[in-house]
Length: 222
Image (cartoon, rainbow, N blue to C red; front, top):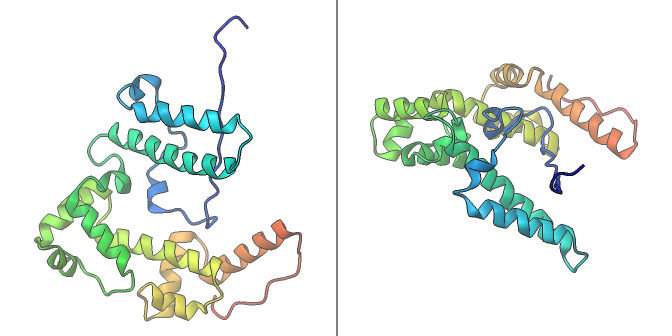
């Protein structure tokens, strides 16, 4: 055509636990579009894209490493731009990090997912009142602290089920469940399948990628 030349850069992120969505990913739309006019106040975006283009077009020592790191930087910068364009509470977990109290609460929960948390205990750790924490947490995250904690626990449980050989009883304890049946119910509600079946699906997926069709060993807990 007669228009200006356009260069398209493409990159892919593969999520580490198929079928288990991180809380940050839950709030993102299917397509995150940052219009050019929204980037004018963010020169760092143009600089990162220019650097990525230069590295992509040259065959030099450490090129793949530099491109990978620049993609990470660009990903974070794009998320920042998207979060800043959302109304209060519209960016969920990502936007919540701008609220110092909610960010501190999230940090505490993730530091010890297995702790027997309740909202009063969490508020006391942060030096605030239970109603204040609950109100600000729901306003920013869109979930109560304990509902968010359950999601975070189930995400970690899914990761451990897929990436380790630890017995499911140990995984349940690692994410704060002393009752295996309660853990199984919570896992099924979050992921739509029991933890044992979830682990088998992950093993089958890995074997397909490796070209191995050997049946998986049975799990102890369903």
